[in-house]
Image (cartoon, rainbow, N blue to C red; front, side, top):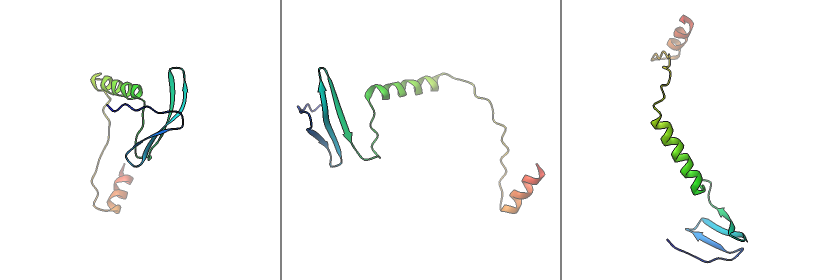
Length: 88
């Protein structure tokens, strides 16, 4: 882990397109700003942990989902699809 000291209004760059700015320091809290491309997902660590825990619980719940009554018919062309719809 790299540890850096910064003051208010100073930045840390990650690569060429991500900037971490120190916005405010009040007691034991530090407000930071993250400037990153929209394609980069930025989350607080505790939010990621919550999401992972919820996903794990959902996958392990073994909840029985109702069966779906879906009729799937392959169609060669639009007229076959139209005829099928009219028959139902």
